[in-house]
Image (cartoon, rainbow over all chains, first blue to last red):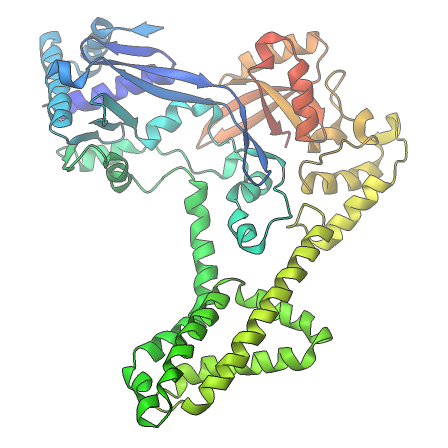
Length: 69
Length: 444
């Protein structure tokens, strides 16, 4: 496999996902960016903390391991 | 926007300058390799991109590399959790030491500028490791990818609070344990000693009590740190001078004798001394625990503050001088930094409410507080436009600039609030698009 290809593949995906575009590759899976709102977390010891929002990268596989094998 | 496979191939062709067919071929091969590796129970890592593996349910999973993760999360990168309520203070001492969560320090000290989360220096790495671009890592099961990922990670991990905190804690406990441990290990390392009692004519039972005491002692030494114990003993000195002195003397003697006089420790004395020591130490520890707990219930919840500051803050709370518009005067300026230092105050201070607020115009004196971020934009013009829009709606609008590793984000925020709590309350009253999409941050 070609290393320039790999590099380009990474770059393209990173660019697109940084723009919050989702990238779907048929027969493989879909990369999406999911926004997670700010939330509160309570610790057992009574501490309460606000967690900042975040954009999280998710990968939804289209490969159901066993059936694709 | 959605990029499908065809578009992706187009982009790849553009990027690589390769033929479309070749790109398709390469892509196919890549996917095949990922599948193959994953189905063989291996994880396939693409450097600076992520790790593909099958989870236990045989689903393909992808763990993005840290740099990638940060890139995606650019907008919010460096935002730290903000503490709204400090932990309860009525717990026992052991729990307390474990509660020293890193977030505390993070929120008070570090803003995003200090963060070193970013690191897209993959180009250099790429050059070095062109051949190693893709690494297949063996794994016996699907279980281990997380660990593997760790191994593969570049040094610039995002600040993992737990990890960051650990060394310090370990150091502390290590310090605390050392003297006792060395003494013990030395002793343990010399079996002749344990044999000796028999030879020297001391009855066999001597061995039996020794072990429990050793355990007791080492157990005790683990609980409070060395300093703490000293403090406690100093406190103790008032009430029970004789005991504390003997404890310290005993302890010193013991810890010194252990490593020092290896060959001939006073075997005969050990028995009664140990007994006394154990009893005294347990007593001291119990009393110390009592003292600590009572101390804690007396001290206000913000424990890391130096006493001077808490006093001052109390003073601020106590003086309810109604301060209207002339709060612009410098005396509030001197007071407010204190308020800010002491972090989220549970109860809003009536004095300050006139200075702070959601609407109206920005008051410079209130810039030490918190604000509700509604937009985070990379383009200053867009930020200005968004701010203008909000200003037209009557909000006090602030644009803060944050630079993260050379890139600047403009955060458009509304309101000035003395506490996180107040900012939260106001944020909950905002109209819809903003009510669920906001974040509280420090203004400065």
